[in-house]
Image (cartoon, rainbow, N blue to C red; front, side):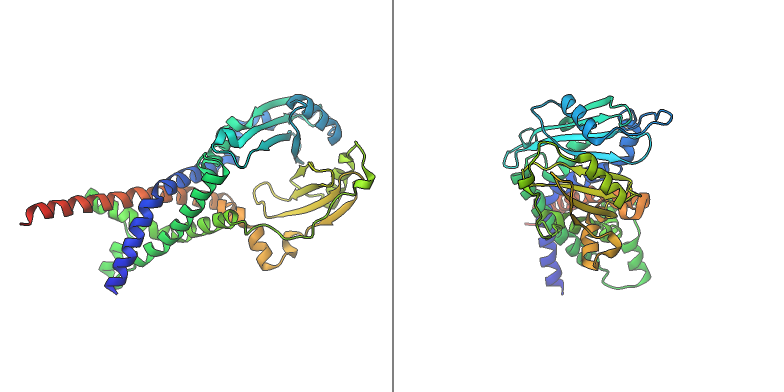
Length: 375
């Protein structure tokens, strides 16, 4: 048993040294991003909220899209709109072009612009170079270390695989030799008044134990994305190109989506790039929980509904887990309490490589000291 634990200890050590820096970055950026939506509500209030004139109604989507196109520029194609159904909220239109093979953050985004419109007046409230926005940079650092998709994504993916193994091996190494009260006290409690060596050891072991379940959920849901296990295999539907027209019936489509999902918090309205592409509309029923949504596909020329996804309550258990992947990863599945848990887990994840490195470093120095004394 001791030999097995020694082997596990060596695996834990070297995987920790190999992936520690990446895990530290992922933990810090994950903690920062946990409350990004709430922080944006405070610091970006001027671009997210507008006053509603008495008796005002929102302008047609087609008219607002033309205004957004003029604001962003004709050389940049709008691909998505975020259409909040709450009174006094702006509409956001996004134009983004990626070079997925490029190396580095600034080459990965060829452009990424957002324009916020007052949906009642059509006024341009704010134009944002989203590539330079703080939380966009934090998210890119979290997802690919600002190295681009090919290199950065590869490094992050396998570092998280290492982290999962570290969590499992860490629990094995933490497991008490016996379950007597004195031993359990050392395993479950941080001795805050101890000397640095003992305190550092406790922070690594005890906090690692208490955060194990949360960190495992966060790591596994991250790998679900990384290995593209959340992709839904639905029958592909296309727009009827025999009915080609230069006018997209956006107002008709949005009206149908709103009629089908009248309690929607906001719509993500995706404009197709290909001639045979469909207009994909996601109707999110909650501002916080992204799994609670209904997805629609419309013919881009006629506005005909081609496909409607199931509501969350109608999904199979496996499909529900896949739909909840993002919310499990961010903690939003449990509301603000879940986000706080994710925030704390991120900080602990960032601290584990630091405390683990210090344990290894101090042991190495002690062994050197012993070797000098021995003849």
